[in-house]
Image 1 (cartoon, rainbow, N blue to C red):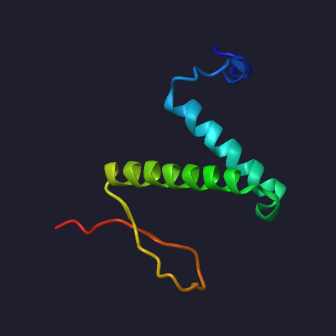
Image 2 (cartoon, rainbow, N blue to C red):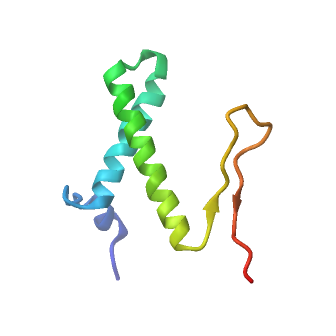
Length: 89
């Protein structure tokens, strides 16, 4: 039987993609928790890069699964963005 507590307590290898993603998410969470208005310009730039990188990762994964994100217009919408699956012919 595997001890899940042990599995989660192991340090991640800093050379892995998961480690890099976790660090990006930690920076984003910190900026949101502190309030974006209270975050320095250099930290906001880093968070913006992190968000773009993570979005590209998600888009790639969705493409690999046969899904795609719809493009949202620049004007505010009344609902969240929708995902759609391509129609099979």
